[in-house]
Image 1 (cartoon, rainbow, N blue to C red):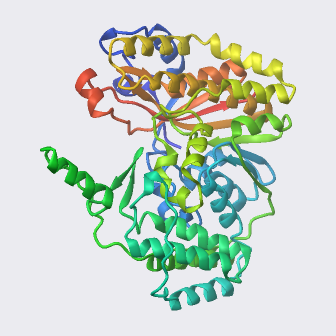
Image 2: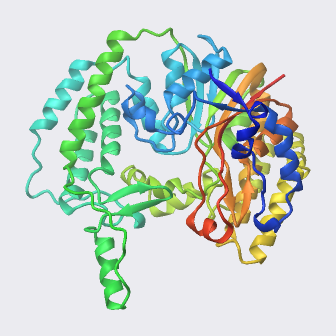
Image 3: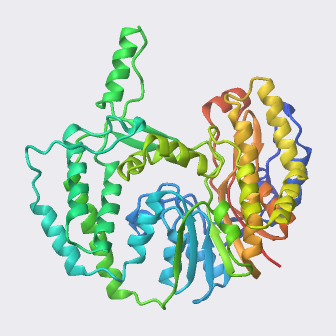
Length: 500
């Protein structure tokens, strides 16, 4: 692996090392500067990883891993490289507390490695069940299923429509709404196996964005200019003398659900055929738990893991319940359930409320009050977190924070992750390594080095910092921040720690 140690490259040190954490030296930054200086020696810039490795991009063409288009996921290639670096062998156990599309779990399965995973998004459960069944599918059944779908014509008098929530109202053309409802009903009532039905559900989920007037774009859904929402917005702007929106989404001709569903099924059929023919991994156990790792991890025994490979939601205000609103609505998640789910996710949006009382109740119920107090003490005594919270508070008073919920979000984000780091330390065997993919962020001119702060917290829990892989490509800032505070490149990193 080609590695470039920053201290051996003084000419590029400035590019990855933050020189100023607070624009115009407004806020306190001595703790962040000290942490940066202390951990820079373990930073490694590697050609082995890039933005495609730590995103869904490389998985688009990967057998099995492309089955759920999960933009926040990372690549199978990255997992394979980390497993090799960790010296993980068949029969070992790897954990992913934020499963997402299941890449870590499925790479492990294909190598005979046991895995444990957690997620509360219902799409994750469907994806994991579909992917881990890859050796169990009856190819003749899938072929027959595809043939039957080709022959299906929706009755002209069919008048049911797909479920929707406030966010997704008007997301589909009317005939597509009927198609979605029809195929959901057909899949529920047909006589195919449970595994085949689940595969159809996954393929329908993957089709929803394609057949809709929406497109996933960061923390929002963008809307095609032909959608009801955009037409009403254009009419409102015209009536109130406002200029038309400059940015318009035009998705062109939308496929029918039947067309998209058949394309998805044919693609997974090809993958299943190839994998069943060419792959024969050793037996392994894939355990998926539908739940929040924050509350589930404390229930597990000590010293059961050989490693952890994961990527938590980033501290970037992205709301998964909005990004995946189409999929959630299809699976029957109501407006009320959306609100509950949003609060249950790791705090990474301005709408999240602190979970500390719920965490305390959970630890108390498990008879782990001492563990709870010890972790809280680590959080409260961390000087870097205290400095960040103070600087953001001052920025808010100065009018530099556009939503005061950012203060609560940042504090809760690191609080919740610290509990997860502590549980991972307890669950890991001696010598086990942990890898977290994450982005650094900036709010109100204040740089928050998530990679180094997380490493410091992990170190205070007991982990030994090993290295921080930094991608050569760095993130920019929002146009609002650059206009007001200038541009500061932000690292995207893979932090690696070891339990002594």
